[in-house]
Every structure is written in structure tokens, then in C-alpha cells.
Length: 283
Length: 283
Image (cartoon, rainbow over all chains, first blue to last red; front, side, top):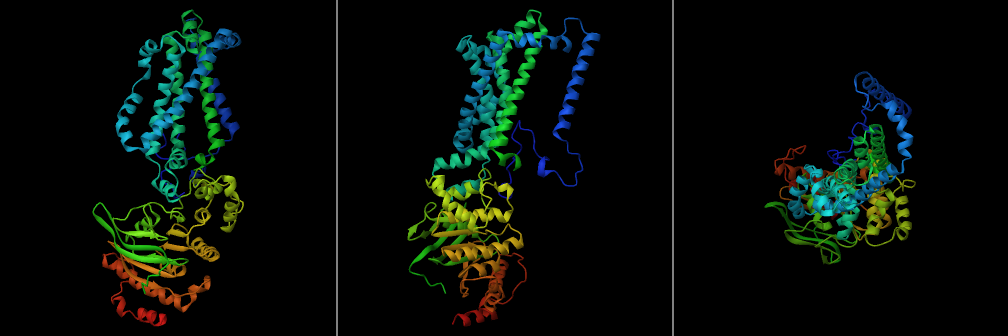
């Protein structure tokens, strides 16, 4: 592994640190290894405990209109079969996926060019960093004026939210591409574009994945906030509408659906990594 | 001893290389004939790797020139393959992908490259590891793949940058002999940079000794051991004589720049008994 001292460089922001996992685990460490089943059992136990605590506290101390698991659970079938909710959730999720795809494509190109071309980096870094640091949701009122109260405004918010961590991370990855790989490509007479596709891009992939991990959460935030502000049909607006019309239990179910969606997306990315980039997790 | 072969494959002509005002190499000249192996040794920091980068076209001479096959090197030249000290395998490519790299980058399809790639993988003893990733291989196996990648382009010139320096002693011995065997099958002009004197003698037909800071040619030695070479060579009288001579000169070259480089030798090379012996045997 000597060829790449900085392969897991500074753990790309957002990606769980993998140090101490797998083969890197120090041999002397007698920490117990858990099977998948054991982990699942722990998770379920914790989940049940949290729900139980919520139920007990709400019943004992809270006014009757505060949602509690028993009543919320009873609402699940009716919410999940409500065509209004389903079409709203579908439109939110599609917007998030579409926005993520645009953000990944654009963000990778912009980030890679920044990371590999010094002058572009110098020109853009300040702006990317400031946009990344600022809350994009502050732009939602403006974007709704520019794009109208339409799904396009929501898409714009999602793309902005998702693209920034990707640009930021991929640029960092591009800057850290080991010069020795570029040497190899040059020594074997790779044309310039081949150096980008066969070295710069794959070497930056771990950073891109870190960016996508962050982007998923941010994209969903953007979509929901845009729906709140622009009153667009969607899962976010469904939540707002139901809370305001005293159907808090329905709103909580919708929140649960959003959580499930984020988990599913991240699971999908992880699966893709394990299948498509076996070298990444092991390296 | 520095006779210039008319059909020199590699010609290093009064090569000087400076980095930001610091002279790394000064007035280095030597030739490598077709099918000849020239080892380059010298104390650490004498510019061996810089010399090699100039030959590979990865660095530009400040003054003087390098030509390969009669053409001045201004960028990595056609038919020149480099084997790197840290292997330089791409972690995101399998052994097959890495070995095929020089071919695919030159525009050959994976399918067209396949027979040759398989043959080379087999030649370096990596049968069955085509689909393995570098992280799944030991250091020695990684360098076997690096060697196969270099040989895959059927090079006119092989440039070896301390290829076995980061391997353990046993693996190094084994790979040296394998390289001799492989080279024997298809003798190529080869520049073999190493910091191991034994390795320089074992591999080289001639040996360029650099002195340090700035690197200058201190001496060029004819090894005078026939081919094919095998393990038995190192037990021969000639091997011992050449090695002892090199040892003396390299240590002095190191001592000149104030490096504690092992046994300090008082007398200059001219008065060295080994050198007298060396000259005598060359007749």
C-alpha cells in the first residue's frame, strides 16, 4: 500500500471515518466483533426504547394533541394509501433524485476542473467556499421569484444544495491526486484527456462519494423547505398542511417516510460503492 | 571505458538539471547501446531519480539533452516503459487493467490487448490474479504487475527506478533473477537505477557511478560478466572484484559530500588495488 500514502486522505468530509475498520483493526485489540444480526438486534432495541420513552412522556406529561407512537402508527395505512400524499411524496422524491443527478454531473466537472487547474481554483475557491458555508435555504424566497412558484424553483434549490458539497469535495480530491499516478499516465503517453478520465477522476472518486453522502441530506432539506415556502405539492407541503389542519399524526408519518427515503438513498450509494468500487473500501 | 557506441539507443549528453537554482545533475553524459543494461548507482541524493525522469521525458533538462533512438526527448517518448519504485499501480484498476494500461492508453481496445496482457501476466507469474486489485497483492506481486505493464508495450527502452527498493530482501533476490530471465528472452536497452551495489553489478553490463550534489559522472565501469546470468554470478570472482571497486568509489562519492556512508576509504580510486585488478582483467 506504499504507493498511496494519502489514499484515505483526511477522510473526505461527510463520509464516516473508516479507520479502525476491517484489516486496519489493530491485532491486539480484543474488541468483540458483532455479527449483522447482533447489530440489528441492538438497533431494534434502541428504536423500541426511543418510541417507548416518547409514548410514556407524551402520555404522562403532554397535552392530548401532541402526537404519540400509538396514534401515529394507527395512521400509517391511511397516509400510505392517501393518493394526495403518494403523489406529493413521489414528486418530492423525483425532484431530489433529479437534482442529485444534475448536481453530481455538474459538481464533478466543476470540482475536478477546480482541483486540477490552478487558476480556476484560485478564481473560484472563495465563492464556492462561501456558498457552501451559507444556508442555501436563505435563497429560496429569491428563487421562487425567479422561477415562479413552480417545481423548477424546488429543483433549483435542490441542485444548489447538493452541488456545493460535491464541488467542494471533488475539488479537494482533485488537488490531492498523487503526482506519482499522473507520472505513470504521462510516462505511458496518455493523452491529456486520458489523464483526466483514467487518473484524476478515479483518484477523486472517494471524495465524490463523501460529497454525495452530504448532498443527499442537503437535497432533501432544500426540497422540503422549497415546498414550505412556495406551497408546492410534495411531502414537505403535506407535512405543513396536515400540521396546520390538526392532523399531526399524519405529518409524523410523512416525516417517517422522508427518513426512510434518505436511508434508502444512502444505502443505495453504499451498495454501489461495494459493487462498483471494491478497491475503495478495502484500500 | 566511456566509448560511445555508434548505434546508441539512449544518449545522455552533457545533461544538467537545476531545480530553482539548485543544480541536481551536472554535465552527465553516457550512452546505452541497443540491448545493453546500464546500471546507475550513487550516494543517496545524487540525482539518480532526476536523471531517470529526464530519460523518461517526465522532466526537462536545463542544459544538454537526452535522445532515444536518435530523437531528442522532449516528452515521454514512444516505446519507453518505466517501472517505478513505488510500483505506481492504479488502485482502482485490476491487475489486468493495470497491465493493459499502456496499450489501452495508446488506443488499443481491451479485447485486442487481451492475449498479450494475459501472456505477460503469466510471464511474471501472476496467473490467476488478473481480476485482483493491487491492495490484494503483496509488494512483490505488485511490482511483478508493474513489470508486466512496462513489458506489455514491447518497449525499446526500459527505465527502472529502484524497482526492488521497497521490497523485502528475499522478494528482491527473487525478482532480480526473474527480471534477468525475462530480459534474456527479449534483450532491451535498459537503464537500471538502484542504490544497491550488488544489484547494479548483477543487472548491468556497465555501471555509471554518480557522485553527489550535484550529481556528476564519477566513473563508468564495465562489468564484464557474460550472459545469461543467474544466481551463480554473485559467487564469481569477477562479481566480487567489481562490487568491491564500486563500493569504494561510491563510499568516497558519499564521503565527498560529507555523508557518513559506511566504511570510509582513504585512498583514491586510482590507487585502489581493486581498480588495478579491474583494469588488468579488462585487458
